[in-house]
Length: 358
Ligand SMILES: NC(=O)c1ccc[n+]([C@@H]2O[C@H](COP(=O)([O-])OP(=O)(O)OC[C@H]3O[C@@H](n4cnc5c(N)ncnc54)[C@H](O)[C@@H]3O)[C@@H](O)[C@H]2O)c1
Image 1 (cartoon, rainbow, N blue to C red):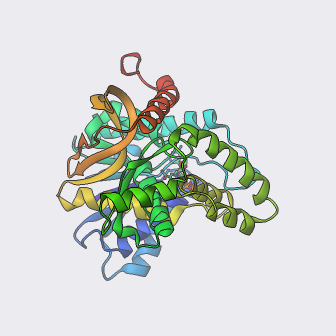
Image 2 (image 1 turned 135 degrees about the vertical axis):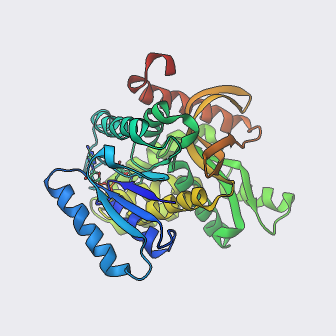
């Protein structure tokens, strides 16, 4: 199985390529295609990245080649890391509309080329933001089951870690999912949390303790207040800002810690790449595994409502893409926040979709 990484020389793309090779996800007989742009810096750096990876990992590297136009992309799994990102500075403000417009064009260009020249069975993992927009634009052109956004899986891994830290256990003992929209609008599904070794009563006590009497009814306002508080701290004392995050409850930490990490200037490339590779490995593995991902829904019933459009949800992922949503009924606070978030995602994606698909 071959993998192509779009935007291979970007911070996230480079990490994805490096981890794919270093973690030996691809056998030496497979191909890793580094995809850049033909213009000056990107084109040169993509060839340079190939040379660097071969230099570092020659003994176990897959075949590595370079593509500099969307039409040349050939792979079983296509990882989309190309496009602009919010500036990684504490004082930066982002024009989300401009970011979405620029990246929508990137998503459309690669999806059109894949639709015209691809095998018809590539699975696409969208990393670039807005993840939901990438999924909407690419799924419209390639088929909804072949396109999955990785934001919900990254948020899920962060949620499990934050819960585990608060309980004083290792992350692998905690399961549970994050749904919704990647970033401030995520939906922590507390009702899905399970902790191995705890029975129902023990788990309820543990989760109630972690939630401190809060429900998701106030979560959006808490996120806004926490982000404002951190914005005022980060300029003078980033250490104090990270320490402040440690005092938040786990679901608030899931949103704020990566956001501060990005704004600190470090960005979140290593963690993002690691979660992306989980999904790539799942697709390459040949077995169906439950992950969380942003997908385009078309009539699936979730929390008692028939859904259309992009939403982050737990799905079954396998070699042909995602097949179905796996989510039981949700408590009212989770269902309500999921509804609100779904409406906000629809507002972001609608301008970029054909009239019938909105
Ligand atoms: N889903 C997540 O959890 C998550 C996490 C971190 C970053 N991201 C997103 O991933 C994307 C990449 O982030 P980064 O930090 O690597 O950014 P970066 O600026 O370091 O790299 C961007 C890459 O995209 C390429 N690119 C830019 N415009 C392009 C265009 N018009 N056509 C083709 N290629 C183009 C660049 O050449 C570069 O290789 C961003 O959209 C960012 O917001 C997502």
